[in-house]
Image 1 (cartoon, rainbow, N blue to C red):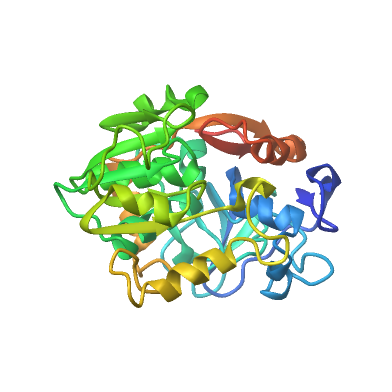
Image 2: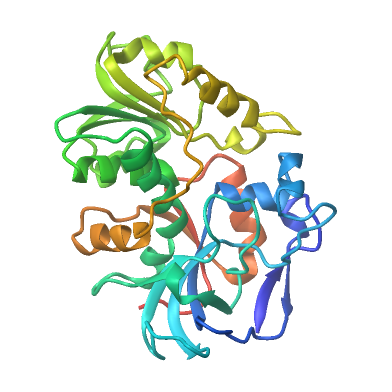
Length: 342
């Protein structure tokens, strides 16, 4: 089968396409013919190998332990391993192949991938496989942020900074599905995407600092900060009494964060401050709650959540797809089209 191969950390241009053996599903696994896989911030971290700490956190010290990038996908079941019960050949499935929030490759940038069946959900009827491929990693991070970290409630005012990006658009849509009034902050060239995301109010982040502009003090019960381009001390000004703040953060593709530790020091500082600051959620290392993929599938089936895809690339152009994401010019989700979608 064809697959994207990552022999070392560095420029996306170092990625190459090669023929490798098709994986064989083990007990409780299925073999999926991949139709689409998403290109997102965690993929970029793994391609570049930054922050350097990720290399000793399971990714591989000198080179990636798993040579095929990608963490999520959607496709069609091609084969089943022993003791597999949930799926059969021909089922359309989607999911994230690695467990929890981890920096490592999951081998989804390939024509086939073997996946534990409990990592997958059926693709809801009427949902395109490329759209389904855009959902898992970003959707699971968003579910964790909205429902576990800041626990958005119906009627609350929520601001999402970076609301047209991969995780931001999911946070905005999930918060709205849970009954919140959502304000989206984006740069000028991505404001039009917020109409597709479906936010209630829009702030042009290029022209207005949401922490000092028209928002006003005490405006929001929740602030979800995806890019982390404003300090918490500034964001706190627009929080209502008892409001909550969550930083997702992705180092802005090298523009922010520390080379060795990335955003880890900033996140650790917020965790420590949460012991005395009720606006910050207490540390939660549990990852997405059991059943989160099922919850995401239900949100998609009800049309409460749908990804806004800005660019698709064929598998052979994976280096260009990662470079496009890294450039900061991406609009909406970036997806690799591995096989024909339906």
